[in-house]
Length: 297
Ligand SMILES: [Zn+2]
Image (cartoon, rainbow, N blue to C red; front, side, top):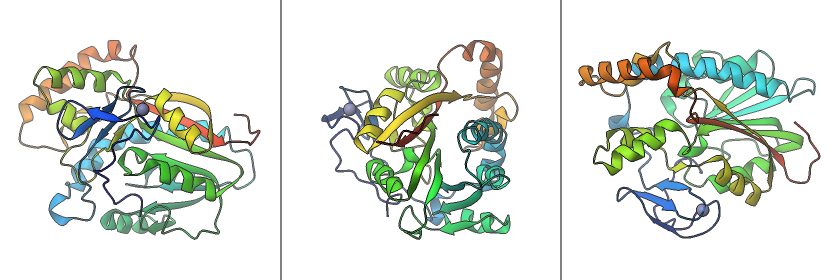
């Protein structure tokens, strides 16, 4: 099971294999060679006491994710020219991407969180409960495999990526949509942490969430990892990390006790919004094919 384990013993960078060194907290480690960052945080999917209020979480994330998924679907559709492409989404969450994809592709989703799995089933989506790739039929192949905000939660991303190759068809596409350490908000959160204000930094890692981030990649070090796993990176793009619509819900969903801080943060983001868009976004999208294929994107 790839997505449930937490490997606290990992001391090598998965991207360039250099040794990791201490970072900004006792759970945070960095690779001084390629800039990869890791966190030794516990995954508590399906642990009752760890569950977030899913109604608030859904409300907080829906607008940004749905708008970004529309853009992502455009990128994927332009590259899947075969008839009825088979698309797998690893970790479907609320099912927003799978709902969009199901309109055009033969879709399968895989989701380890039992509550989310039941919700996805209620929506009528074709979804399997369990962890990637163990829960899949190993003979089934896909034209596209999509990880939306999932790779950074997987304890062993190298094994997950190599598993994708075993269920690729000829000319399949791997789509990774994930946070980047080059993003403006992550870099600001790191500065805050160094100044003794660690709240934003811990929030960016989703520390104390049921499934925290275990990795922060940038486009160059993710490319190194993909190359080591047998992929060719074909394109790297970004998606907006904030949109004004639904912004307050997104700020407030994880903590309903500090409303004045949420209002202040919302106000600061709204007035800085025109400026923020000039800096590197915190969300990157990487498209890759299997090494050795001639597929052009
Ligand atoms: Zn490295």
